[in-house]
Length: 102
Image (cartoon, rainbow, N blue to C red; front, side, top):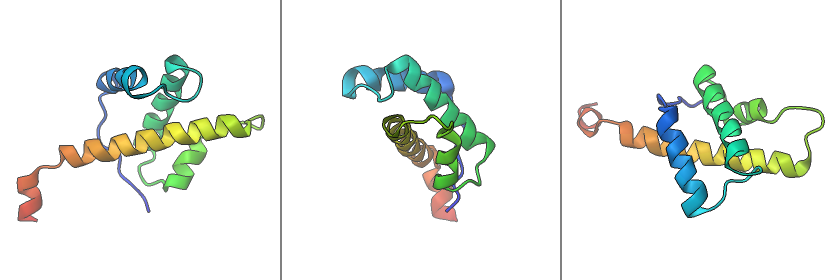
């Protein structure tokens, strides 16, 4: 099923993921700096290709012939975290009055 990515404030997302990494649990993928690079890639791919299925969007993040299974798993986990975050942001961004009138 295709999805639409909401408009994303990367500065706010950077702060969110920085807190998440320190307070909730460390992000997979070799620390916050490396994880942030992947997270930005996911945000860009979802914004550029809003019609992608989850499988196709994930394939845009998983690249390279020398990808190890462990690294692929880390990238999949980061992709899943961003997907859940975008879904939560999209739900919070909806206007409840407009939804009632539809």
